[in-house]
Image (cartoon, rainbow, N blue to C red):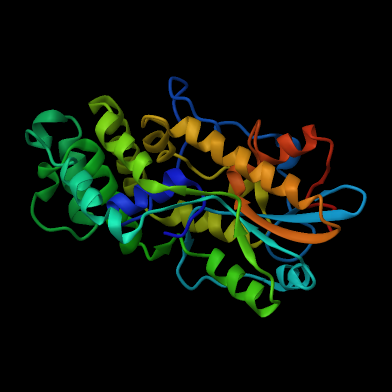
Length: 319
């Protein structure tokens, strides 16, 4: 997955599969994106997905909020994106976490550490029947889920479910980057981090309780089926921000229960704010593409940019 937040990228590298969205996390879990700024959650007036505009005297950065997953092959109106990339001096993309070929032995070692020390049905007897059904429903044969710790089973199940539902985490970014190349606009991530330190922290320091929270969140998503994610993606494509941003978020429990993840989300958000702030020093216009939920969250990207004195225009009037 070439997706934004280093936390999600790290989980993807580890499990070889992205985790989809889902329902509000329990209050006991620190979730930086639990709440949104309702004044920023405004449906679009222009065709296609919603855009927010950040500006000062001589610079405008158009920001497109994107969903976490989309149905493969889903079409969306790119006319506004095409117009905004024309003459832009940069395309700012979300932070990325990278692992190189030299990290492969360590990655394989980390993956092996997600293997169960005792059968998972003994660790989580209450979840075992649900997990067995979900495992079969996502096309996996046998009871191989028993061989994994809760976190490992959750990650594998999420990946299998997303593949089976024909959802992708590569869009709409792939289309956006293709159009940027057409307009000769260079893409630059808000920040680049090494994935391995985060992966080691996730695997070595996560508690069994966190793993069980993760697993239960993924089970909730699998049982709900892919339609809520598809509906949210369709709403996003139509500029229906409220429907898109208030999509179910059960799987967020998985991420936010893991060690260091809430702090990592805040660090990624801060990097995006800083990248836009730096871009505002160059006269002209730029385009940015960030996670929709993180964009409109309380203490999120747009709220922080407004606190820095920039003018933030919502999609009902951005042009």
